[in-house]
Image (cartoon, rainbow, N blue to C red):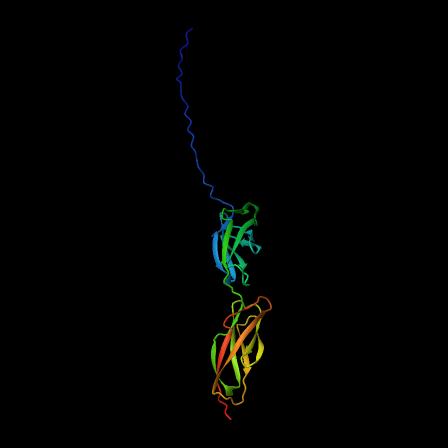
Length: 242
């Protein structure tokens, strides 16, 4: 018996299609907007912006800590649909020995109100802050180095100025070329004081003379002050006659 094949060979072609899916639904990725920040000490408050991307419909937070001369820590929060937050750090207003302070701030320990929206720390998790220390030590000085005075006015009032750091009491001694002396105190938070010197009301042999007033021995309850212009010359017109 003879068998004749009647089937036709068929090739089954299978086509594979590759689909590339971009996962753009990120669960609360947080990081610094800027990683290099410059500030001045006299700004008093340092504000550093952080941001989150991805799912922002829930409350989330992120802890932060600093490294450097001062170690601080805190937490920044995001409210629902809020993509930006801020870290606020109060800068010390005390004079520093170094002209520049460098502070490292790092984001850590994120959390969220909904477990499925727990944030992750992005690549911008560290910021370096360079702070210019522009708060100077307290300085006591005469704002002017020469004043005019008429003898019959009886009292010479000489103003004294405090510059730089203000959050402490400062004081210094004073003396005149006529043998008078005393101490002047400028309270915390105030920028000026006044030395009152009684002047002899007896007739003088010269119609005019110069009295020298000198500051010395600066003192403070916290930071030792410096002396600026520490001499003042009083030009006295002797108008009291016999």
